[in-house]
Image 1 (cartoon, rainbow, N blue to C red):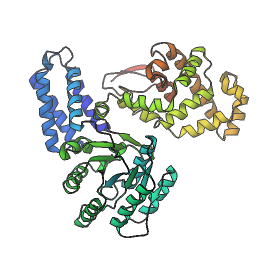
Image 2 (tube, helix red, strand yellow):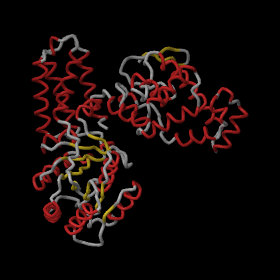
Image 3 (tube, rainbow, N blue to C red):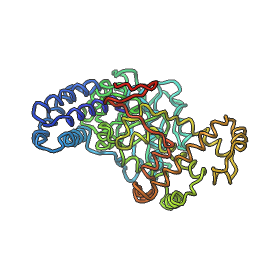
Image 4 (cartoon, helix red, strand yellow):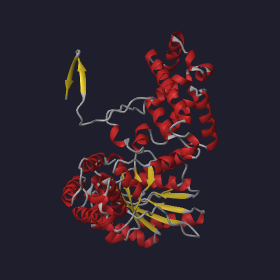
Length: 475
């Protein structure tokens, strides 16, 4: 997300870093580039104007011009202002006692309300709550069936009726939730392709009938300013409690995320970062600002790692690395954990300085399945000691896994490279798994394991010397 905006911000900071002295004129030039980048990212014009004004005032007030590292000071100022723009943090779902807490989701058709309802219910289950999903979208064909299927996948109950009266369904669902001891009743509602009187009247009637404790607007982030404008209208008519931005993983511009809080005054509660039902994240403005500026998101990475790794397991793994007894079973476990954490490329993007260097790195998450098949075709002895896997064994393993011999050879070579790097990192530069993630995952080890020791190519505008046919060519 925000790849284009990140690249442009970094270009601005590089231009400042290359100057021997920073003046008000330099700052003015930099802010002109920032203004252009934000407008191209589809950020609201008034928001851009005020943001640039605030950054300029803060930069001059912070005496950036007298700093030894003006570009670093500017990065800090821009990060702080981005955090203010999108903040404050408000990811709490306020639950009432006695329950159930009634949450109503509203939004336009195609914004992802039904899937978001299921994601939010899954999130609540992880928090120890018992949610009830309500199929209240009686307009869109198959909406009820879609929610029932999603509920079945998550083992979460779904309330539905064969009715065309959305108010009746909503009232009955709340009664059912109260009677059966559910903590939360999650109302999915009907949307339209655009805001119209009929839809808003229906939503207002539902809200009046059940008096929801919280109303969240679900917006498609890829629609940019349209999402912000619709959020403003919904807020004026329904009095929203928060916004959930969906499809943020596919939004290279990011205008909605940067504008919606400033325009509506309502906090962004959650963001959808993928189609899968676990791809819903709490929204943290400071972490998002860090991602936008290409500085990664270590805190989120740590949280994801800690969900997958236990302290004692990480300690055992570190000892294996130090002794050189790290085997293919261990390697496969790490890869499976990375897959659960969101995939290789997503994890690398959260590492500081890595987000802008992935363009030339070919990482295919689909290779996990092939990797598992290859490892599972090996004997236990081969998994413990891959050095014993000669050409005849590789042919046998390839036949068992349904792959080519060179696929087996590639995995073995990748593992050995990673094993050597992990062994060095486990007690050296990175200080080990346990110290960094408190029982989670080592940053350097994670990168090594995920890339198999591949070098990440970084595009550079600097002159390079290229040897070609015995001659030296400078470009």
